[in-house]
Length: 267
Image (cartoon, rainbow, N blue to C red; front, side):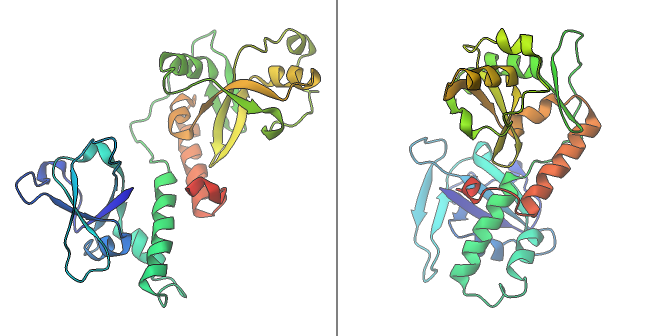
């Protein structure tokens, strides 16, 4: 469940109210936006899962308001999904045609916009590419080059977060043209080794390690292979240059702004 809180200035964890009053949130983004007053306002997006019990939340009476009021009774930094500038959200509901809609419709549109903002990758000015060792295997996708060796080491060190599962070969985007692949490597490919799929654009996963295994599996008439799956939020750390990282973040966020993603991705 997503909860929202509008604030009139930049969020500071040190100012979170821990006394008997708690901190107000609502499940309605439109109502939260009303409280994000001024040009420096923000909307905090909070993830609340009752069964996880990371934070204590209660539902409170809120007079005649159509939205519900929730009180968070402790610090909630670990549950913040995104802090979005209010001006970005206001622009959405003030757009021609949308500004005349009812509050329910505006709230629905606002929820979609918030989810899109949550899909975006924040540009980290502190980003520094990992050193490339001589023996590292690299994968190039246009101007983007990934360090496969270090990605796989990262995955194996956190195997609980990256389980091995099955993927249908017909769902892969790498096509069936194998003319660019080494025939010897195809013949000797170990089909027991999981291939690696990376989220190259929102909701789209490409093979970045294991194309020879895919080719061999197709020739042998297999329908699926074991694989690891890594999302953009994780694999961007393994781009081999700062310029590629900056271009990738720009490319990804433009895909979101242009609506170039599968609508199912928002669910």
